[in-house]
Length: 104
Image 1: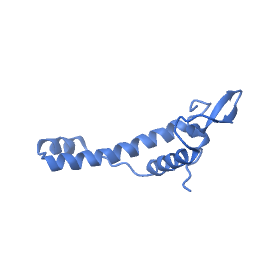
Image 2 (image 1 turned 180 degrees about the horizontal axis):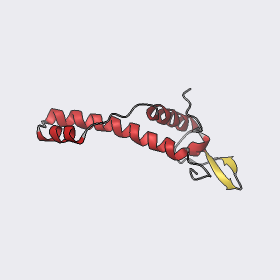
Image 3 (image 1 turned 90 degrees about the vertical axis):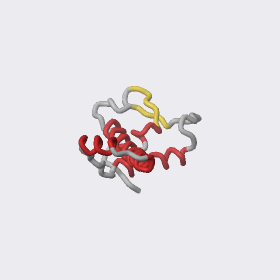
Image 4 (image 1 turned 90 degrees about the horizontal axis):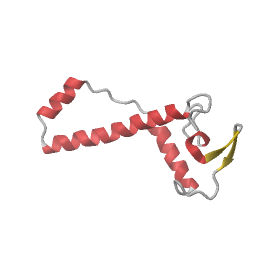
């Protein structure tokens, strides 16, 4: 199992806040599907959040846009698809780690 400090399935929304810091497991709610699916999504989120995001200078992006062909646009879209998944998962983990109950 991949673990990220202070980010776990509980902070990922598998529990509901009852007030006064008490939490109860979500029961009977099919918001995300089965518990197995939630666990799989959580593990994928953690895995993606631990990957290094690729920095691309603005000048390089500009040049890619000037000399684009259909195949290069497809490659750029596939790269962007992977990068967005990494960056959004990193932000989701950052949000789950917020102090003072701000992540709930």
